[in-house]
Length: 122
Length: 139
Image (tube, rainbow over all chains, first blue to last red; front, side):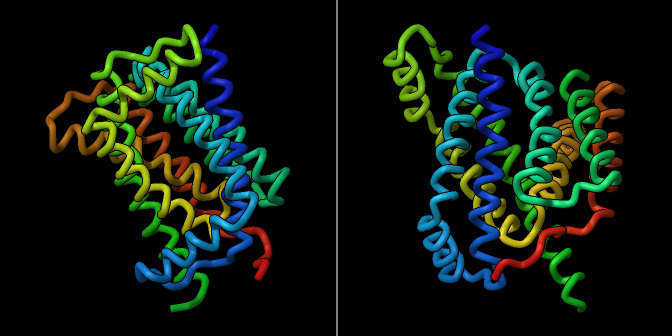
């Protein structure tokens, strides 16, 4: 039971957090300079966006749930179940962020999920 | 180099960095947390005690450093690329980890696992055929 509860948090809070972080980074706009000072500036700006804090909180929640899960169960058990995140994430990216997930991308995402399950189970 | 190609190239560079640092972080964290002996979920304080033990473990710290580098690359790539592009593409880490384990550590890799690697590569290849960005530039 506790495994499934934490798994739900990993998948749902994890993808929600990533979507929120994506929204914040899109608000900043394409990063074009990669020297350390410019990167620090980008991170500084990111930290002043509400979506970033929401995203980081959700990701922290998912991260600590994953830590707890990994302390009880093997990676080969946990990873195939968390692979569901790829589907949930693509769905949310389409609905919330308006990304165009066309058939090719969907097939790619589904193949990735199947592949990850096979790798983890194998 | 055209603008679209330049954006695609830097997307790939970021994904390669994510693929290198992400799994290293996961493995180090997993090993470190196992060394500390598990988190007991009996009360809120026991959860914090369990997690606190993790902070006294070097492997956990190395794992976190690796994951911070991973996360910075992740943030940067998301400033221009689709989440639904980056997220499945970074799953190539499973293929890289399996391949490196086989070549560097000489780990035996069961055929089901190789099949998984092939399927992931196919999936990542398909995702890579789609545009890196499908939403309008906001700035």
